[in-house]
Image 1 (cartoon, helix red, strand yellow):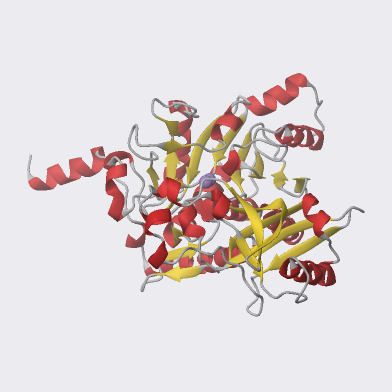
Image 2: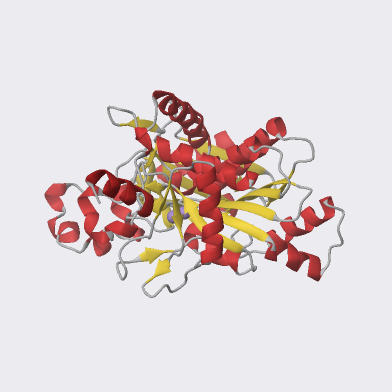
Length: 455
Ligand code: MN
Ligand code: MN
């Protein structure tokens, strides 16, 4: 065999994934344009409630005849297009992201500084949240049921909030010498909210000043925080990253990058013959519990509404059939290999930035515990769809065996007897206040979901 033949053979027989930027200039401009729409979406959707509202509004403008949606408690949304043929295609993402929540009795004063107690939400590296500009988003529901929306820190003229870190000069003993996981205590993650006393003599005069400002601006009093959901998120807007602008730095890309791609794929999918659903779920980052998480029976509502729209009988058997016939992309992100920490990955099964959308057959940790493990048959089906549509894809496992791991909503969806595989782009610095994605991976993820819907 000569060199040329050998080369040909290698190309035919080997699995290789490739960098998405080897494409033409027109590809690059398509990816860059798509990224602009995505960055705008991210800047307007920093919480699950805001995402549902945004998608709801967009649906009204972009829906096709017969499309409908279901919203669950303002935190889940399902976009549905009923097809004529049997079979259901779901792309399911989550729209909550790691953040800092405000406690129910948050306001206190110490050393004449007014602060909010917080409780972090999801898996964060706490040190990343000290001394960065933070914004407050959420709702306060008053005793009479009136809901007051609060959004501070996003407008150029708005104030921001900060969790103050300790100066290096004095942090040797209390912070620096400890293990990182012990050095930053959740209980010390308090947010500065004010420092002017309302009066010279009054006790807790700074706290009272903050209460009076809040009362004037929002008509709320201290007890109203008990029934509030206020989320602290980075007051940072999405930006292009790098001289070549190939990457995007932004908060909340796990997993709103998949939510974004799934809704774009839904709206742009050619009329096809199967039923398609873009599903956006809450509470993934804290274990998928609760009535808006993937473990809730909201999926049952989706099944029932589809059956009703198809004028089919709604009974135990038809619901069971609905789920058994469903094929699902659990659309969530993977962790891309960080060039400085390659050792936590096994290179042949890791996912790489710019190398396309990632198919993750199983998640979980050591020994495949807590994993959805997609069947070979279903993986074959999905890879064929992607290959036919010329989607740039790669396989990915989250870290070396025994290194750690993680889960997604895949296993909860699979428990309904649906075929499920994880599929989404790989991020750098996942769960940080400023996560990194790639513009080619964004485009390929969209193309993958669209091809899946159109199959
Ligand atoms: Mn995720
Ligand atoms: Mn996550």
